[in-house]
Image 1 (cartoon, rainbow, N blue to C red):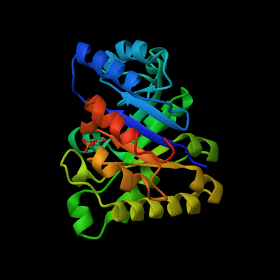
Image 2 (tube, rainbow, N blue to C red; image 1 turned 30 degrees about the horizontal axis):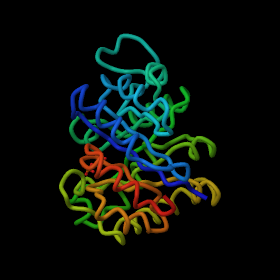
Image 3 (tube, rainbow, N blue to C red; image 1 turned 90 degrees about the horizontal axis):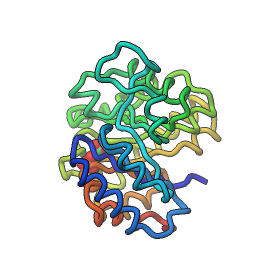
Length: 253
Ligand code: PGA
């Protein structure tokens, strides 16, 4: 039985005071979340400040990225051990903004994924097609390439620790959400791909989040789909009411 997983990606937003206020607001607004997993991924400079707001709550902390090396001459980068040291449990890898704006490729995402697992972090690996990919009927080709490249070389156990976020690039930050049917179709195809690459047990155990303009008003229909196990939320994670409003749509909350 897969547990629902809702993660908030704050991206490069908020300042220290607003980060602390938002984290504290989410902690006090949420009721019993023992039936699901919730994580918040603030900007790296505010990880510690947010960690102290989350310390007495079941909400986990996550980073928005990491480097694949543990230490060394990599100016501006953050390592897995640094992230666990400040309390991170999760790390987002291969977000479309990193792939498309910073030129990150599958091989790099894959190195980061192996480093994250080595250091005890639970990775959230993002995959997703652009609008032109979708219009050309190439959605599953792109997802398959990203899956085979970014997620290469995992053991069954490592695949089970890893969450995949299906985030159609055309739906991120645009207000345009994939329909529940469109999202379900990709999630189901991706799950079959995992079943064929690993086995039935691994495929049926992997959590696949949907991401791209998730809001309280569309979350219930998305989360009701059999292969959608949660959401990776951007814009709507920057507000207590909208983030907790999404969590309240999780079946069984
Ligand atoms: P959005 O972002 O919810 O603002 O579309 C989602 C994401 O980038 O993970």
